[in-house]
Image: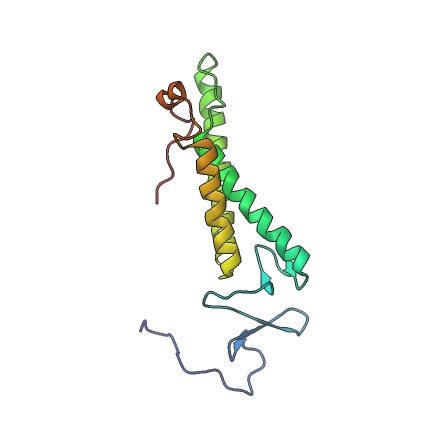
Length: 157
């Protein structure tokens, strides 16, 4: 155990501690559960504080949002938007912008998965799979398109 880390449970009389007994105090004095393992259910916070809330419809919207984020990451990983006839400087700047957008969206998918919600995990994987099927697989790609690589290099793990 690293020096300075106290693994003892917080005392019940301490109200200024941000964590007590597996819960985290919210800004308005309400308690919300902080999950540290996978769980199934629509009571989750995904990406933003208080979103999607406790309404099942908003949870479904959050799942659709994460799905399409993953699909867009795959599209950006396999797209050809840069024309070879343009300026090298402009092409390099645009390629850098595309890379930054792709990495930002991939990190948003990762942060959504860190909600530890099984539904979010499954739709993120499904979004990446569908995106790859549409934009990267041999099932959909034409033979000529396989010879031309994408604008961006593969994402490293």
